[in-house]
Image (cartoon, rainbow, N blue to C red; front, top):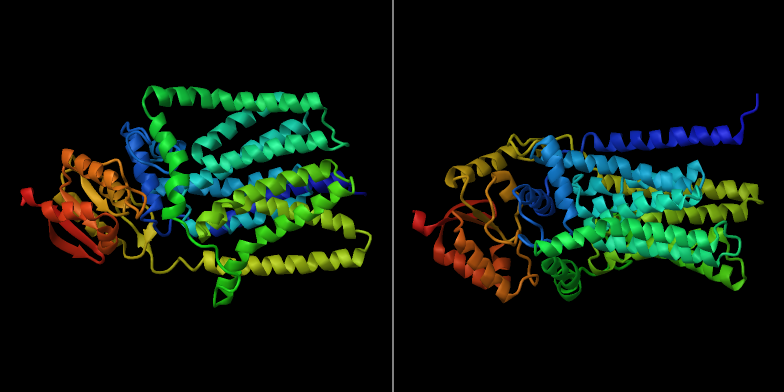
Length: 514
């Protein structure tokens, strides 16, 4: 009995996504509720809680992320209860969905094996590094991939109207993480232009325009009413300042981290991480050289147009790591790079297919190299987390951390000191305490970061605090706060008295209440 190539492909499309999910579950199962991020996870959790209480992002509290991530997290709290365990469940859902989306998008251009190879690294390089917290960036990446997948499906099926829901997803991605969505939109526009220029394109100019118009209509369907609502409720000016002006005027100065040198890193693991910063640049350069020679030799076809899309998408995404070059921002840039790498390998395979032995040797060596590389990264990203952690028994906990009893006792001490109707301040950057203690922040700022706020912001911060005087102030990194916000530190010393110390956190109680 002969087995057709179509049947093999169908079998691959069944088994590959299943294997991806099994790998992802095996990695996530012992880890998705382990560890805690006092800063960014606290910002997301407490921001979602402020939304649940009727506050509007940007208008009522400052956020460097667009508003939708707070609403999606608030919806998760509504469905599963207000706890960190619920937030991690949301993150786990994103973690399991992203490799499947990458595989599905890869299958629009590649075979099952290469699509699997493009998706598999997403099971390691991503949310496992950040405790499976569904940060706005990862919500945005997942939604952007869903938008691109739907757009490509619309083109493959020659159904322009399907580009409209792709536009809806693109606008939702914009409301989750504006830079990633803009990069994705620019890459899709580039794809349409490249297909227009490809002489063997299976799409007419009329059809390409239809795809564009339907896609644009889907974007306008969400974005237009959203902008009108934000303008009506007075959130739009602050949104513009915090999401457009701030990144260019302030963030690149206050939060920049230098790009690592090739020679940085002492251990094999550290050098592997540094190498990961340079791999996308290398792959993008190779793809650009190939496209350049294709144009010069007049061999730019539909396949090259597709490659140019992945190149532009990967290169634009990589801009996220150029200002703040840390591992978290690096990982955000990689999903389009995985697809670019798989596409480049498919081109190389086609070129060396006539040399069967050489092609097999190349495939084996590359597979060994990639698996070894991921194994080294896995040892850093996925340490043994089954020992030394216990469940945080707070009602808003549900996760497993080291010394949970210390955290629980500290939180309950704060709750005993401060009535539920009173406020607290956790400075400079410990928003998790607002969430765990279930006590509100009287100011618009959920964090203080050197250079992010001006002297006028500090004055307004104090004014807002005094309208609803915090019963206690929790201070860590007092040296940093004294240097970057002396006015706020002086305010604390004038109105509060140091009464207790737990590790590096000092508890100050309001003088008038003693």
